[in-house]
Image (cartoon, rainbow, N blue to C red; front, side):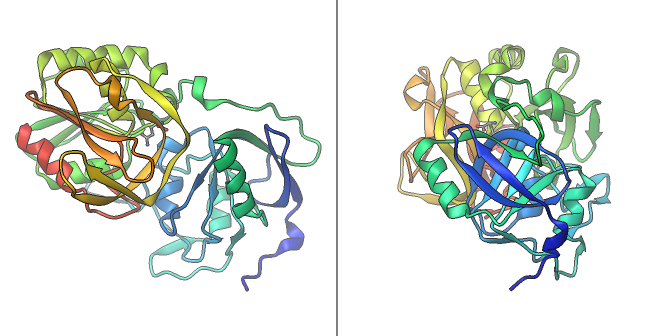
Length: 360
Ligand SMILES: NC(=O)CC[C@H](N)C(=O)O
């Protein structure tokens, strides 16, 4: 049994938009917060998961019952690249766990889970029956919710209508020189491991904000990163990706990048009932029986039937058969809904980066 200093933790409420109320104990930052409540069924990798900018605007439920027992490592910088986390801070609005561990043990960890949340002013609630909560979210679908401390007045907040990418995209351009070929990384809230993976392939990376005027740059390939929110909100980005398609520059889209590339190509996206969030999502290539276990974090999906002529579905999800990727039959465009960069999760689909680099 993991002992937390419960007396110091006030009882607070988790209120869902449909009227369900759960009581739990507050840890991390002491404040009320609203967002979209989503669940993740991964068993490990909370430092990487909580720093993934795609979670902006969301209150995350971990279904794994005990979180925090290996602590959290320091954000380290080696050769200008950050290590251990996927961005420079915790990105979720708040989190919901059954039990958290104040005690931790890992050679590389320096924060307890509670202290880490406090450092970034993120509240957490524990003592919640996360199985019951997840069943509600599976039945009803993802729902708006709020964590309310005392008599605080908190409005519901719907992240799907907000421009969340503007909150996580970098403020300035950054160049990582590592080879002759130059990849333009359009950073919509990029996980650091996408940059690490590209540099592993000996290419230079020009990392730019999502609304950067790319006309003035020279590049050999484009990576459209992952990112938070609803893809149809980003009209200007979709327009600039249309220009990239016209120029036939080799392009790799990852998660949000896959959705944006599909919309720019003339396809459609829709919202899944409760999304895919975990490190054990099975996908299969459409034209063979090859399967891969993938890391995922998304709410929206590309409608396979909407893909225009020439754009072929590449992978499908084996749980719900939704689209997991596409590629063009002649032109150098490919994109995936899952995360080939992993962190957290299996590295089975690392070959996606090679397929892209081969086209550059
Ligand atoms: N990880 C991502 O890029 C997520 C994309 C998008 N925000 C979604 O939820 O579908």
